[in-house]
Length: 178
Length: 178
DNA sequence: AAGCTAAAGTTCGACACTAAAGAATACACA
DNA sequence: TGTGTATTCTTTAGTGTCGAACTTTAGCTT
Image (cartoon, rainbow over all chains, first blue to last red; front, side, top):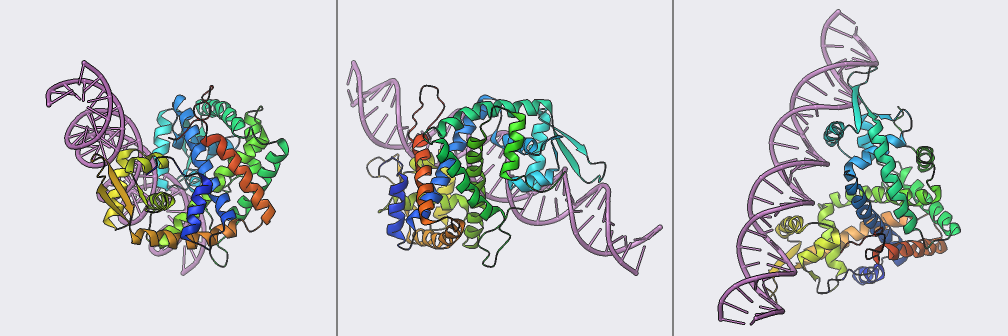
């Protein structure tokens, strides 16, 4: 009953003992990805907290900035991209509206629709987070040369393309978010 | 107001317009990672659903298998590794115990403690998921050669080492989970 | 021994998310 | 023009997670 977390290699060795046909190479990549993302999110979460922001709020802010000027999106669009139900989106917007991070108005072209916009406060918050985050991120990649960073980015992009462009293919193995 | 999600490169281009000092190379890696993880989780989630398992349950199953024979862990340990509060752990165990996925007994060496064990049902469930998941994972890495897979795994491992071994360094930039 | 402190897990109240039903608007077609 | 259908968001009820207080046990100190 050791309290220490198994290393990635230990984890894969055990997995292989349980399921012999497993490809250790594939497993290493996939599990490293998932472990990395968890750690990164913890790090982000702490930095967000110091700025009085929650992860859910941060996600919405990112989407709005990512949309580019004039920083407007429909709630349904944000919900789809974040993998949330419309109901959750309504509540998030409620909270963020209360903090003056976003605006909410009816779409004049279709009054069922709502337009969410970024306030100046929201935009500044995004910038503050990015300033802090970029320090952490640079730290994370510290051990990789410029060449390696490019290679890594390129390979990840290739994986991403495979999964983002996958419109339920024959076997229905890869699925899309939208 | 396009409904299409910005591509990774579009996202980074806009981010850079908002914050000029941003390193696009770093940003590409980090955001690709995060996008990949989200997509992977959606894919896993769907496969889990077909097996009548939830993601929270799957996480616990993984930790128990990863612990190796005799597949036993304390609730607190699992909670720490998954980044949950002890309270959440109690409830997860409750549910999984009810489905005969895990056992729960008091630790004879320290009666405050509890020992969570994997049932045969739980172990079989893990195997079923892995069988399905490995198909998806192989599909995901399809475009990478064996050499590239090794390189990718190696680089991710290096990033991981940086973030997993970081015990609050001077600047407090990288933080640990435990 | 007796009492203090620390550690582990459970209970409780508050809040966020989901699924499903509901309300309002737009659009197609008779 | 009127009706039916689809779309978008909101509301409601149920579930999961968190933070904090509480209970039980172990180990240390005197």
